[in-house]
Length: 425
Image 1 (cartoon, rainbow, N blue to C red):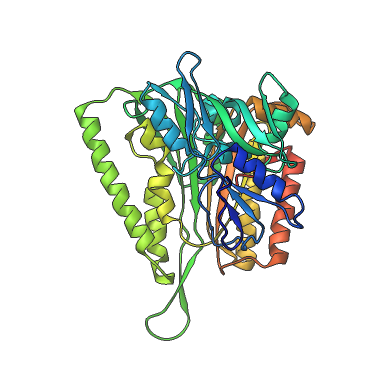
Image 2: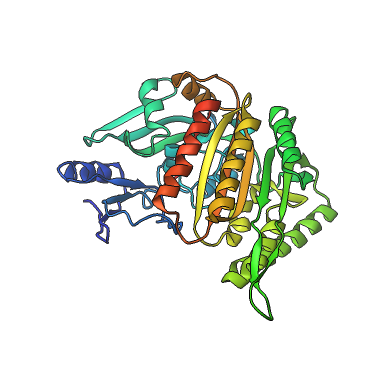
């Protein structure tokens, strides 16, 4: 029996593949289409309410089988990667690629490709998928994988649910104890954007034995505040800084463990400050806290490092934002980075639509991405992921300005043979 529940908009909550089949077949005659959601609803403050019927897979969250001999795990599509990883941890295994938030689901991550700060080493999440089960738009169950129905396999992966609803997946696992694998951070800090980009390119090109790598850049707009006496405003200066972090395995000592505990408490305190500082007056506080939080701590466990953004950084990211992520071939990586930064900084200077412009970047060595590049007649080479997050002022972009920004991004991708990454789950 189907376990669909109705809310506004209409939402279906299947518990198994048979429920998904019934939902799809019952919806074939609808004028609108089903939208697939992996987990809990998410609102970034920009999206308009989607009035289409939603198939939420959050009740399809079981770990179905762990094969220790093959080092694989089979899961329902709504299973959270953090939960899967914990189950694997009891057997000395772990997922090589996880998202940076604990609520990301296996099906949702697969439908958008999936990248992480370990992608320079293990590729994308979809590179680690052995096979999958899906329900096509006509309500038929199918299977495909690396070694059977490979064309269909590649068509469904990264398609955001448009080619079929993923209901179950078999994933690669690796031998790892994430709770007892300690990492130390080699950090380089920059006040100059040119030096930051040059260093990021060098690290992405030659990562060595880094377990994780990530670079972050923050560029704030001048802050105008009212004068305490008289009329007019005082304009404070911009803040521009960045850090590249390469995290390497290390041997834990009592001192390292103590530093980790102190660092954890400090980051949580800063996160509380950043999330509590509201309004225009709180902008400097939030910016300062975000700056302190964006840097990876000196020592931490692998599991802590994978979810650093979830536990700390996200707490300082208040308000609506425009986000875009681009896979830039290494041959054009620096050019793409400069052009994207200039595009957003130029719009901020001319229209004042953005406040803080931040960027995150790391390497991606993905066989799937190489094959996708070949499909688009692009060079089959390694890539750097470049993600820009631009905080909005006012609360939304005018449609004509948004079209101008999107057009500029498309021109950069076309001229530099880059690919846009649709990371929406």
